Length: 339
Image 1 (cartoon, rainbow, N blue to C red):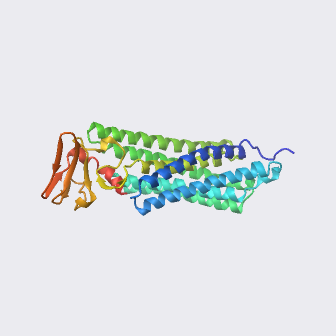
Image 2 (cartoon, rainbow, N blue to C red):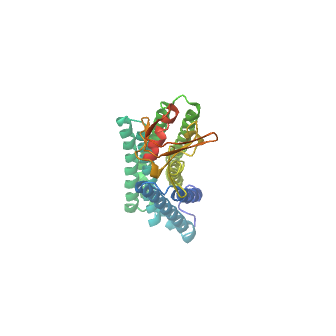
Image 3 (cartoon, rainbow, N blue to C red):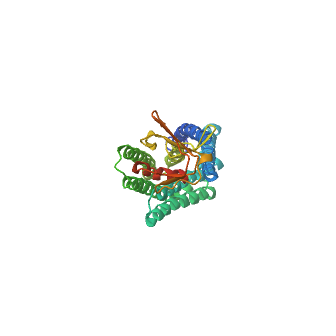
């Protein structure tokens, strides 16, 4: 008997999306492992964020594999089973709402940290993010009330709505990041090059997530009875998770091996070191915290080590080291490290 549904645009699309997202899940595991190995000194809130993202990503991958196996293997000779969503399909839809919300909220907090003080803009972005999250939750709940796919299709307008909200939020976030980073240029070539790299990364990640949302919208317009958007959103969730993990893993670890060191740096880059050398302050020797406005006060008998071939200096009395202009440009990175 002929199948009552077109497999190419339904479970064929979800299977391809699951294959691609499974490969991305390998990257999630790698980045999560790297984070816990390198950033043992992070706050518990940041560790909880990474754990939650990994758990959601893991469950979403498992449920996607399960419902594809259910439809394409267990019921390969039962076309009627393709007409109704099963429990793992519905749970996968529910979990797809998590990563975009967490990722966008994370980036909004980064915007505030690096200097964006437009409350209206940040509130507008969060409103779009919350709208998307609400629509996805409602859609997942409706999938339990309307398990038959033909009935569930009447809620496709919700998918179009949250795809539109997500597309707008991603674009506005990328533009806001680029603007905020651009106005913080200092005129120092090395620092400005670092800002350029951050802007390129922001544009690339924002463009990729926006492209997938746009493809989802197009699939709903031209393939109204298909499940292409489900396959695309399985992949989209992995992108959101890995963008957050990539940002967290780009920082310099606070604890390096057995040494307890404070370093004036936040990203793994040679640009974060002062031009005259790398200044390291040992935990037991620093009395007061770093004043980012331009002062670092060091108690007597503090040793200041400079990684230079021609100088080694030991301070035996109270003294104040004023940060040069090139050091002050690290304020943005240190702020991000504190977040």
